[in-house]
Image (cartoon, rainbow, N blue to C red):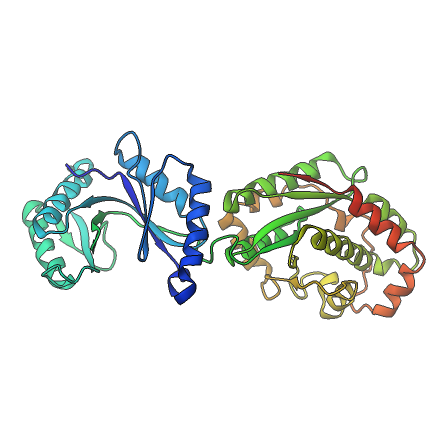
Length: 396
């Protein structure tokens, strides 16, 4: 009886990296090891990773759970729980019949079940071509199980076979992977994390492009409650499931907001908040070796994110790159992605964040840099920024 005790993992775009491919595969292997622990063997061969055999047995549920878990690692195109047999027609056919019998056993009361056979022949020494072997194997399965019928478009049972030099792999499921590049291959960035919907999605987008993302939250307690900070911690924990070893920095921001609240031209208040956040975040990023800042800005979504106001805010920067991966997203697109990655339900919990504190009734939509600078001249920028940076504390 074939034992489904390993996972076939297929890398995504790193397979196209040419001479740098081994570098990306090395980082992907490191991230898999961090996620799966030391007990799961990881074998890397050309174009594939094999996870397993699973210690302690070969129950399909174990391999299935492992395949689903590994699919969340960035750099993975898809995964399949599989069994491994010798590369010869007799061994493959026998294993397929036995696996199909196991799959059909719970369905004995049904009149028929649709299936498709899909063969990939990477080992060209195997005598039959992929299509020829798929046809002959399909006929053998129909002879063995008369309730089967062929449906190449939407089969109930998609039987996959990969014929490779290291063995042949048979599977009935394929889990879509996270895609992108392995976390860590493109350096480290610092994402400004609020309790809203957008910034966690922006952080996830940068993880997908190979960045390790540190998170920085601006805490407005005691003006807002403890629930707001707990919500941000849960968002950080959720994002940790995608990259591991996530660090959350917390900056006390209430004193700065109080001083900015008392300045004239209240319509500039949110812009000034964001300019100070950018200054603080940039200084922290430079001290900690982050190569860029990340925000959840989406053009035109709120008053502070008009083209003019984004320019006014960015002018407070001293030159560190600012990435805005959601700049062209509308709210529905961002919400859909937040649901997909598991942050949406946390983000919509009804707790205030620092950007909504002392919010002006009529925020300016076309701010000017010279006005913002004239207002900021009324406070000690260097002292406020320096103390905020020094008092920032980190959680993991």
